[in-house]
Image 1 (cartoon, rainbow, N blue to C red):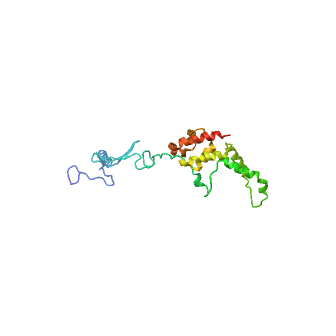
Image 2: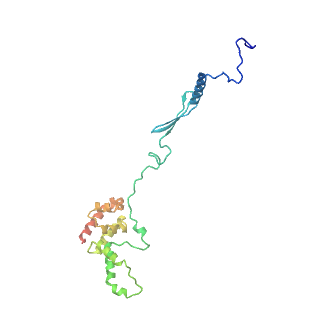
Image 3: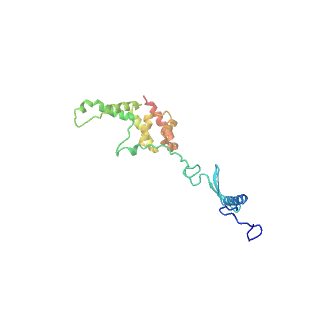
Length: 216
């Protein structure tokens, strides 16, 4: 028999579980709503080979931010510091490296001086204040191999005419030692002469002709 409280109303039995259950459809709808709101607030990140784009959607509109590839990187191609410098022509710095009051010698001049010392070696060895270095013989052989002329004085006189055209003493010795056959070969072997080519070509050609006459 039903208790008071309304027609058809009955109290749940003692110790029983509640018959009220959440609807699966309702749970799905709530869950779907939360997922959609989460996706809406999400952040989309895109990567490609040329640039990196960071775009966020707010209210259905995109606000992309692009960082160009290599921008700000000095080591990247096209950045600062990648410009190659034109190499400067080689210069002989023999005079700067020699001690003060020293003079450059041609190989033929060095050979002539060392041979004179060798001829007096017996007399010099008797003087205790004079010590012949161990490298003397090697230096003499090297100078002889670089000596290409029969008359050292004639070679020096001919080459010294080039000093009037700003040719340095170190360059004069190199010309004598390498024995170039012509002007073009001299400029190729001694790059520092190229800056003086317009004024030194003709006198250098005359000097090379003179050197060929006293060459061994």
